[in-house]
Amino acid sequence: MFRFLAGVGSTLLLVAAGFFLWTGQAEQERIIPPPPEPTPLLSPMKQPAIKPPPAASPKSKEEKRFGRADKNKDGRITRDELLQPRRKPFEKLDANRDGRLSFEEWAVKTAAKFSGADADRSGWLSAREYETTKPKAKAKPDRRCAC
Figure 1 (cartoon, rainbow, N blue to C red):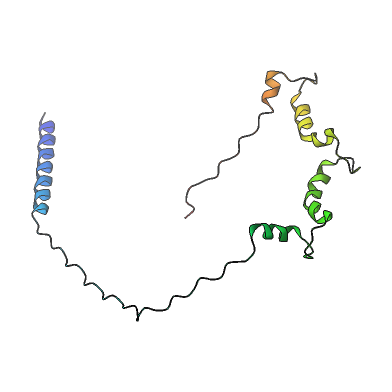
Figure 2 (cartoon, rainbow, N blue to C red; figure 1 turned 45 degrees about the vertical axis):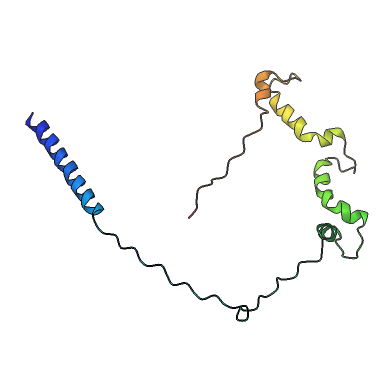
């Protein structure tokens, strides 16, 4: 019982000491510094000359796009220049290298996904087999600061 009363008494003493410290700080006189003196304004005659902004590129968005497509910079876009960026993706899909893309070659990823999911080789997917074709969730980038 004595410990309980000692704890209550010490708690009351700490609260009273905190109150007196708080009120003692509130009674201190605060000194507000005077505002800084205003700087004299420059007259229009004394202002430094402002440099003009740099000139913008005269090329429009369409001209820049044309410049990227014109590989040999002759001012003309040939069929080969226009189709060149699409050749590698086409060659990846053209499995038999005949220069033609059949539906099966175009749908090779989907066909491979179906074959991998059809575990019992029945030619159709059950609900459980179809669950395995679910796209994998992309990992979210870590947005914490790397400081």
